[in-house]
Amino acid sequence: MELDLPLVYLSALIVLLGGASFLVIRQVIKTRNSEVKLVELQSKLSKGQGNSYDHYQLGSILLEKKLFGPASKEFQKALKSDDLQEGEPRALVCNALGYAYAAQEQYDLAIRHYREALKQKTGYVVALNNLGFAYERKQLTIQALQAYEQVLEIEPKNSIASKRAESMRKRIVPST
Image 1 (cartoon, helix red, strand yellow):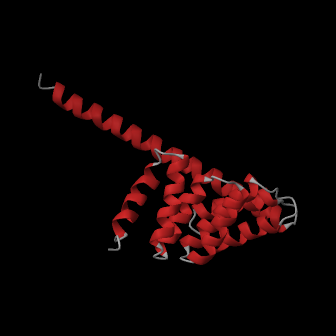
Image 2 (image 1 turned 120 degrees about the vertical axis):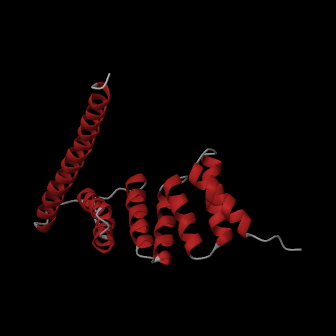
Image 3 (image 1 turned 90 degrees about the vertical axis):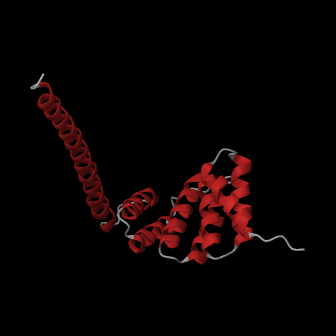
């Protein structure tokens, strides 16, 4: 009976350390893969061999690293590329560029790119949510509410839009 308690503690410690080790190793592998892809893309693009998708991938990696300025430049290059198709591919790049601008607090540019994403792909929920966020930051409560309500028309159970729309409704004071 006396040996059971230390054995339980030791077992729990081993399980805890094993779990922590697994998480650390998984993160190291993920970071390593990201770094390898980053180097490959930078090398390819520096030789002028890349396409719009390569610029988009590089921009996405830079976004993950919170390097918003360089990410913006890569997304702009993707948009200028001749091989970028209209529709969803262009919408994805526009939304990512809008996100990079919003992260830099350049909300007017973010709004412009979110709107372009919505022109390219009608009903693009992520872009609509992002547009609502940018409107919020610009203190454009009514436009933010409209964006969130559009999301809720498409996805009635969207928790982000639901919470944000409710918050926007509380800010709007009914005129008497």
